[in-house]
Each structure stands twice: as structure tokens, then as C-alpha cells.
Length: 330
Image 1 (cartoon, rainbow, N blue to C red):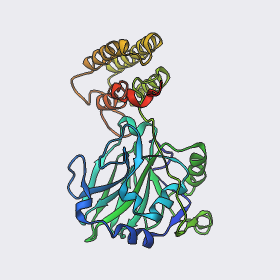
Image 2: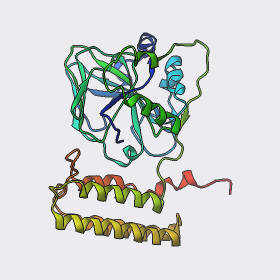
Image 3: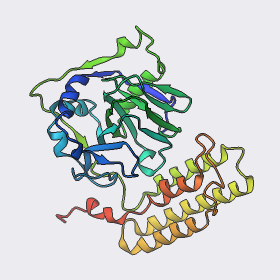
Image 4: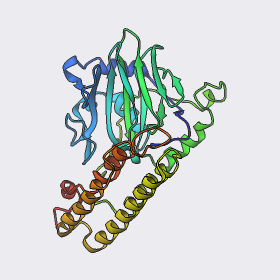
């Protein structure tokens, strides 16, 4: 998700030692490899599809047995009061890195990632845009995943973060706006005065809310049009893009959005319309330039083709989600 700053520290401080004691129960066998097979990048699911061991973004999310075994971690995650998407413990092995990339699939259109370091050291550096910081144990941070970012663990110690994805309520984003002015510096005592400690409270139950509906079987036309317009803005905001190709892409996206709305008004979620939706998406995909970087988003230098495919065309029709949207008692 786009932010005004590369990094924003949130006003919470958690007990890293208590979190460390809870994750000590996990063995190497509990850690799953990265879905892209990135060396030294491992995870333990805490909120996942159906509460199982997977890396899926879509479908009803639930807490996992691993999270159930960590009382304080549940309190930490519940303390935000937000509806949580896929969330994990993420380990970056000693000497490993998360290579530079941009998060641009549909999940990141409306979600931000909260980082709470559990095990770390000053040689673990998070780069985002033109800034680089060390997130200290127990602190709470978010970052702009639309900018190019990477993490380097140059130490001889594994790094472990609690990583929580959420869309965030208006309350959450009001807190973000209040903290953006501080930037990445401590600015003591002004910043420190904002930080609230959240200690472990033995026996206190945690209320963790998880996503049940996160991708529609058929994308609503208003959302479809909003994403199309953002993609058009990304094309137009890069003066180095070919002007004629930019016009062609703009007309393609505008036409697709109008035809999607027309088809939606006639069929909605009905199965009778699925083939028509697929035809619209397939025709649009076939009209994209063969060069995936024929047009480029100026702010992060990612080719527009993969963004269009991931954020719109692949996300617009997911009929396998129909079961979650139908009341089975009817």
C-alpha cells in the first residue's frame, strides 16, 4: 500500500523478551520455506486460509494452532482491534536477504504490513525507497510496499519478525497520520511521549478478528473502475512512457471498465455471466504489449503489464470463492 513516508513507526512498544520465550518452542521443522523459494526466508503461519499451513491470501482466514500456543502473541495481534489478513512469523536467516522488489498484487491494493521485530540486531537493515532503518526489538512499524524495498541481514544471527497484514479501520489510519510527521528519527522526547507499552497480561483472553471476505467471486464495477483509474494515473504520471501506447492502454482500461459494469448489471455473480467476464478479461490481456515493460510506473519502475495482470485481470474473477458468498442455509 502507498504511504506518505517510506516508514512510519506506530506508537506501540511490545515485550520482545516475552515474544522470544514463546517462539522458542518452534523447531526448524515448523518453519515453512518462502513460496518463491527465496533462500533463507522462512515463515510460520499465524493467520491463514482456514487456519492451516499455507501461504494463501484469498478466502476465509483463521488463526492457526501455532498462534494458539502463544498467549502473548495473541494479545499483541488482538491489541490493534483490526480485522487481520494473512499474518506470519517471518525468519530471515543469518547472512540472507529479501531481494529488492515491489508488492503490487491485488492483496496489496488495500492492505498494509505491520512489522514487530522479535529477534534482531543492528546489522539487520530494512531499505524502502530512499530510506534505510533498523527496526529495534519490540517496536512497531509499517512501510510503503509500493516503493522498492529490501531487507539485508548482514549478521550471524537469524532475524524473526511478527508480521501482520490488515486493511485498517479509520481509527488505525488516524493513528498513522498522527505518526507520519515524526519520520524515522526518534525525535525524543516528542516521539517517546507517544509510545504506549503493551505488557504481557497472563490469563487475559485475546480477541482476534480475521478476514472472511477478501476477494469477491466477481469484482464489483466500482472497485474495478477505481483500480483501472489508478493504473491509468500510473501510466500518465511517467513522462518517459510512449505517448501513443499510453493512450492505447488508457482507452483499453476505460473500455474494459465500462464493459465490466455493463456485464455486472446484467449478471452480477450469476454463473450465466462467468464466460462473458472471462472473455472480457482474456481479450484485454491479449491486447497488452508483448514487452512487459513497454510502459513503466514512474515511482517504482515496475512494468505496467504485470501490475495490470495481478491487480486487475487476475483479481477480477474468482468464482471458486462463490461458496464463501452464498448462505448455505438458503
